Length: 140
Image 1: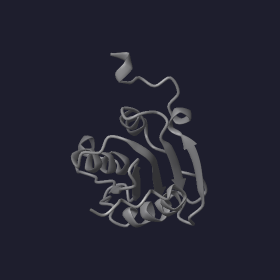
Image 2: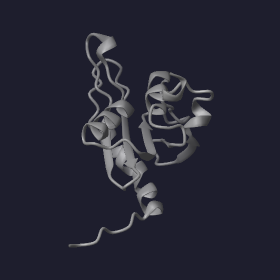
Image 3: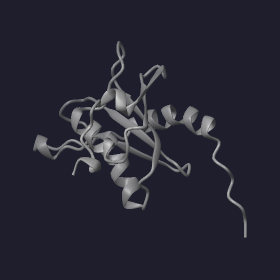
Image 4: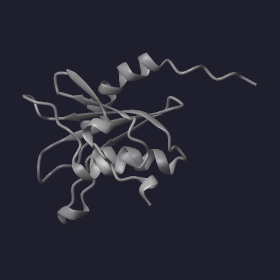
């Protein structure tokens, strides 16, 4: 039986912004033309990517962050370390929308959120800073 390679966390985190930028290229955004990509790192080192998918019925749109989380959860993962988010904004860092912040908090507010500009510049925040006093499972 082969042993698992331990997670090289610093390498995984360093690669996450590039993976989000790659996922952004798959965005289906014919209405807003605002492309978003996400890369979600699980605690066991797997990465799930997502992009925003728009719909003519705007309420049916799904953000890149939720796409990545849904893919991961549907594969049995519910423990996460970090999420990188890439947008087309050049002059400032794009942040997750309120719905995505709430969605992500379901899995813990200690998640690191890495914001990525098209240039590759990054800025990181704990989710708890982006969604203070979050409503979560412990509130039910």
